[in-house]
Length: 233
Image (cartoon, rainbow, N blue to C red; front, side, top):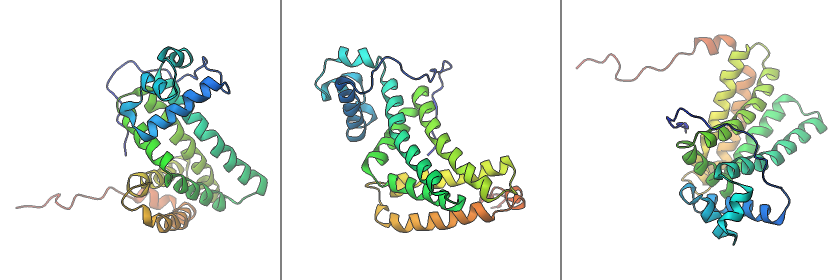
């Protein structure tokens, strides 16, 4: 799914919020309530007033720590990404994992996360918010850029014949293949029951693609023409 950024010319600056103190009972309660509201009730309910109600606080108590709901989005994404980032890096570093196994780990792990209610609902709702909020769009884009950058590292190692631009194309394709599964086979989606098979196919053939696609194949690929293009009546 493509995030359509709003047409406003003034963009929010994606700075790290500095007004909250992680680890305090109040902030922990706010973040827990914010995640619950976003996952269970959706982007339309994601307001400071609703979050305050969910955690039993006055809205002023919430806005004292998070003056804007966008700050909550930023912190939630950072806290969701950091543990998985650390786990992946530890597995790869501590075991001296080969690049093909590391890429398979990233692909398989991402598809496992997509099967959880939290991740399916969270990113579906964040996409909806991003369509109307540049700040949220920037934060979501940073998450995808992190995953894409990790994939690109392994693609470049597996296939040194590819130029940086070709590595970028292949890596974006792999990322898009993974993330596109959310809407079709994520939690509660129509094809979720066959996600194990989808995962197995993705791991096998996306890794194979990264290892075997040639620069010539990337360069020679052209857009598929519309079936009706050039057809006369």
